[in-house]
Amino acid sequence: MYAMDFNYIGANVTEREKLIEDGKDDEEDDEGNMIPEQVAIRGEQSDFVVVMLNLASIPDSVVRKIDFMPGW
Image (cartoon, rainbow, N blue to C red; front, top):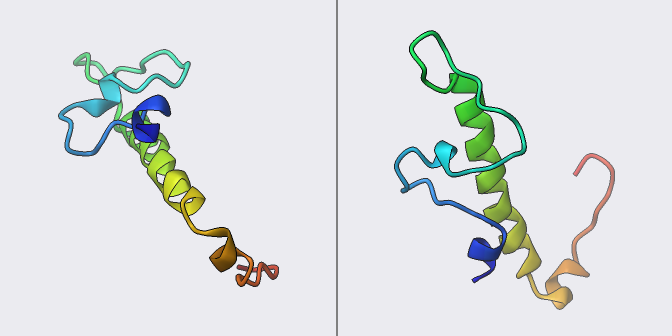
């Protein structure tokens, strides 16, 4: 449910970069395809949602034991 609310689109979805909206216009090459850099950035943005959702599900009792020292 949260993944859908945060607009996560799984890597299993073909051409998911076309479904991900990041507020930027599509950059296309000479053949009309989205440039590889933009495809990668949109995929990373969507995957970052999953990382954040997984971190958010860690119990407070576990997080309290993590030493967040500089360089971590």
